[in-house]
Length: 106
Image (cartoon, rainbow, N blue to C red; front, side):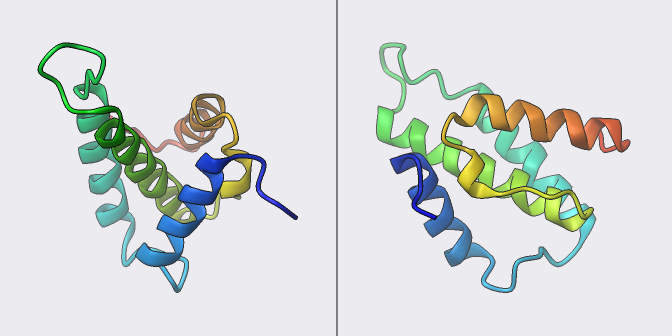
């Protein structure tokens, strides 16, 4: 199946680079990475004067989604990077699924 967006292509490539085996080393490492990436994402403010460029903000988004997918896979939540054609909606869906399973993201 072809990717539905350039974002999913970037996300799948990043996942292939980061986790060729598919799973993070541990749940705690995966959770810590999501929390760290989430803070970076929340503070990116790429549209404000003097803030990082759009490409840096995009890299932050991809890195967060990679970390989120790794965490989801760590707790056996089905998470397909191809579903991130509209990243914000899919991101929220995965976050809600994790939260309903008792995983607190911060």
